Image (cartoon, helix red, strand yellow):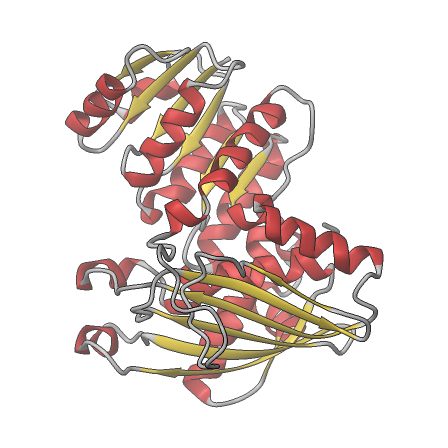
Length: 352
């Protein structure tokens, strides 16, 4: 297999290392808007199982006869690169999001579905051991009927001010992972949302029309209740958890010795000695597993484990939350879908 990887920033370089060591990959072509970054990544991977070659232009990857493409570029380039790969009939892995808006997402999905190529989106929590165990517990009935879910995504420090204008905001950039995880773990759709946001830190969040902290209350289509909390200011460390409460039992994904939280009870353990510092450290095994899954998708061994339709559904919930935050109203997600898509079949809900 020959794989082209576009974007050699932090996550792109990590994916490059994973692919370069995968037994199914014979050659890896790297490209970046900064050619020096691609060449530096290739140099670091000398001696890997696969041959790693850096090229100076993204176009070169598409014309070099690769079997698949991995997209880890800036968000603004995702949709266009997906469309270009689809037109060449290439299976695509793309970091989330497809686009930060619904029209851009739909444009890419139309081309993917017209060409019939596999598309896998990088919601890596689907490959995390804790989230996988939580999904199995819900599906098996071990928790009884599920009545409450509490999801947390808390970054240890805010991103640079320049990142915000292209990020899509806290719900689309950060909490969207929770929205996808809620759907995937529970097997239910999100019916309505009520969202709130606040700015307690740097002024540049408000200046960008964004918030640094948010809470969304979600109602699932079976009546179960969900809270999603996201913040850019969690000084204790990188905290990602999902708590699931059922009529028989309660289970937590992401609770362990490195969880950046300290109990106030006097007889409890103290603060974690080595709390999770960032997303890449916390989810390293999941990132490796999702890239291995993509090589199976390319070879036709399995279907995409996280499709473009899954990404669209998570984005719709993020859109609903942002609308609710701005208007102060509860937003009906199916109603928003009808408002945005109308009779457009490319936007109609499909089975997972």
